[in-house]
Image (cartoon, rainbow, N blue to C red; front, side):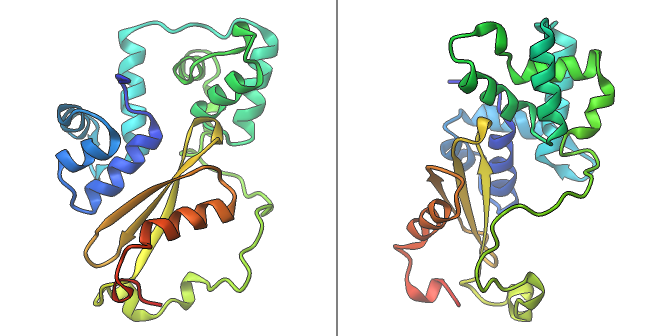
Length: 223
């Protein structure tokens, strides 16, 4: 079992904690010991409560103090990492992509921790490219959902959370963007369903969402 939580796990922890789930339930969902969740919530909380990006930053900063990291030695490797950062990729995603792209070339692979260390110690000017920093507007390239209803068109009763059966979905992407968790939260009760999606394409995430809600009574899913 891994020692440190990654950002994707912290995002799941945040959603489940916000939904009122117990530390034992969160630990079971993440496959972690309850003490790990307790320690995470105690050490990485901020002025506005627990936030995954803030928790990730706090944990990274502590590890920087505790131990020196491996360096990005080669110019080609620095070029790959810099280019992906400029494309708004996270260090976790870059590390996963390097491992997948250069499976037989260890010199072209680094951990996400090494990338964070490099950013802090050598190229702090690249820090702004991380998604928690400012983001320059970019043209929309994702495929549009046919007949999609804007969130502004959502009935007022849904926003008021007066009725059961209205669900809110999101995805938590794995390092390297190879798979994802689809999370669904019932807005009034905060009941959570989590299912794994084999890929990030819309049909796959929709199948995971439908699978997560399939066994519920029709009255539990309003239209």
